[in-house]
Structures are given as structure tokens and as C-alpha cells.
Image (cartoon, rainbow over all chains, first blue to last red; front, side, top):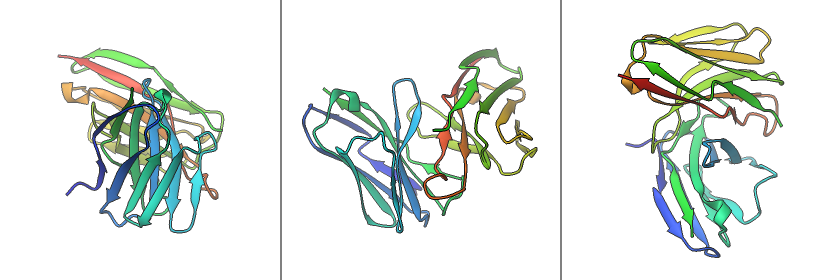
Length: 112
Length: 114
């Protein structure tokens, strides 16, 4: 019954690989997000997306791309992984522009 | 972009003590939120504040939205061991495309000594 679920929980991969992280929400929310949390625990928005618009944080490399097959899913695809991509990635959702984001439990990505 | 200054960065307190942490910003926000993150989990919403001057409680937690819309504080009374975690403030503008995204402070790591 998890509201926002991410898979996998842990992901270890080599530099240069391409990987995807999946996110699903069963809350009926129409807006979904991806956040990156670095080693100092700083949370930074990467993308926000609903069926009308995709907002991309300009600092996010174009190796990162969100893919949304439907309103309940927002997957994160990463090409040519680099060491600096190692972090915890959080998916979140909200109803419209409400402040009450619901977060997933995160995916810890380690690039070796 | 907007930045939130959250303090203190970390706190070590005895069980039963009261805790206070705050956030300030150079920008005005329409909404302030406080989240708690426990190890291995995502942030969980504690309190949302929507009006300048608003004071809201959630159990032992109390938060206030500053009159200028540029600051907020969170108080925890009579701390218990399960209060341990990282507390984040977050601001939201709600004023146009992209600006409804949350901007997070850098967090306050709370440790409670039994």
C-alpha cells in the first residue's frame, strides 16, 4: 500500500552504463518530481512533471531524462553514468501545486 | 535561485528537552513546510504553513510562518528518542510555471540522548 514506491532501493553500477529508476504513485496525484540528495543531505529539484508541462532544473545534465508513461509513473533514465552521479534519488508527488509532497523512500545510486 | 538558510546544522539534546530550529530566506515564499527524514527513508511532511503569521501545531511540534513570509521556526517540546532525524524546512512560491517547486533548506540533524 506504499503511496510512492521507487525501484530499485539500491543500485550499484559502473561508469558509462545507462540505468533507469522507476517511480509509481497510487495517490491519484497529477504532479510528480525527482529530487537528488547529495552526501551532505542537500535536496535539490531535478524535474517536475504533470500532463501539461515538464519543468527541468537547468543545472541537470541532459544525460538525465524523465519518462512518464502515464500519470501514475515517472521514471528517471540516466545515460553514461559518472562518479558524480552517486547520490540518493527521491521521487515525489503532489496534487496540483499543493505543498504537501509525498516522497518515496529513495534509490541509493552508487557509480563505481 | 532562492536559498533557505536553516539553523542550527546539528543539535545534540537530552531526552525531555525542548528543541527549536529555524529557517530564513532572502525571498518571500507563499508556503512554508517542515519535513522530517529518518535514515533510509524519504522526507515526511510534518507541518504546512500557508498564511503569514500562522502558528500551527502537530502534537509536540509547533511551527510558525513569519509575518514577512521570509522565515519560519519549528519547535519540538519534550523530545523523545524517536525524534531523531534530519528536519528540513522548505519554501514554495505558487506563483507561476516552475515556481511551485519546493526549495529545501540544508537540514538540521537532531540527536536525542536518552
